[in-house]
Length: 231
Image (cartoon, rainbow, N blue to C red; front, side, top):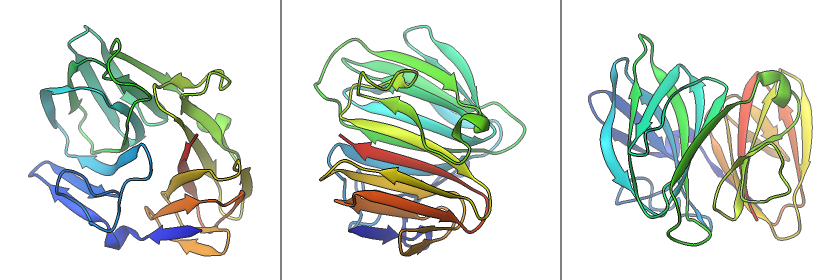
């Protein structure tokens, strides 16, 4: 089964500097019909205005994966980490027993990103942060594992969750196929129009996936795909 979540049906959250579309209902916000899928409970499509962002604030017992689509996000945290994560880069933060961090758009252009929250495999633990560049050439026409809770996914950023995050880039007319293990669930978001199996998705639409053994994608236009597969 694949359930379409059109961009127009997503909930919204806005500040004077932030525009967020919510693929999942969370904290009293979002479309109440868009419930969490297992440990996947937040997927926000965010746009930060230039020179804006979240000041230092705490998190605990959540795995946060940030996929930067356009611009760059500047991160700093209470562990002393500081980094600038550009489009094409991915950052992960295991908040564990507790961490404070800030996220800013220090650029002169808007920042657009996906932020994904997952429940951890087990609570507590040592908090950590990491980032890595994933050039488009590594993701062209195929899914590459960006972050994973499976030790077998060498080269992926590690997360403490029963999930893996995959990314792909497609040109108009390109196809890709991705097998899923029996009974697997997941969620896919596309930045451009695609056909997913027999379902037509528009730009920034989402699709909840349950028990589909194979995903077949045809790009109707240029698109970046991000897929969270729950293990």
